[in-house]
Length: 310
Image (tube, rainbow, N blue to C red; front, top):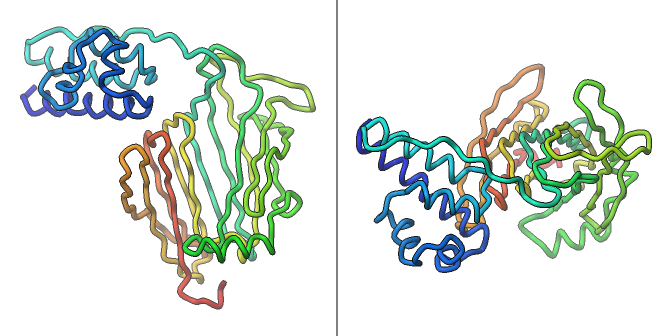
């Protein structure tokens, strides 16, 4: 293994460390105090002056609770050292699960299609309970903005044409092989926003998601095209392993589609071009994101060239 591979592995460790330290809202001095290292050591580590060590990685993982992401970066780095004959890579350590109810989204598929003047949205989430307590509910939301570039106009528009639960025809199910309907309730409602709690169970009988268990939930809703707006956004509020966003339009609409990723930990927005294909009279766009960042926004926008379609 050459030195460049080792340097790249060390840099990947530093990036992961710095990301999770900022995400946990810790200064370098605070982190150093909690792991028992001198503050200058953490600073030198993030600047690349020190290389990762096993003890440092173990303590950082225990304090930042990154789901072994920082530790795995160290394992990769240690592997490059072993192949150069410098040291042996340690076996991964077991990190205790976080206290309380905690969910990880192993995969999310968000699909939106324009059908007969309605935008129909469907969300599939593969959930994994990774905490120490059972989970009994999961919160989702519907959020639209007819004129995102003109907040005052959009606010006035949605005040005149508010969302209603009857209009969106919300439904949800749980299970993989034989999905069953989920009970749900609206906990917050604004003109262009609905917050909805999905209750784990079926036929009115609670059935919590216990620690270590996995399940699949699906929910769907619809909004009239003239009310929805020209964008679909996914906000990463829970650790997510994979995100997939798909759009489907009639080929005759000739939409222009583009995407963007906004990270609030770095205040950086990156433009993205989704892949596309045409079949059966439809044009489909897809954007797959492995390991999307927490508290980041992933957004697809579209425009129609013919204003009469609006």
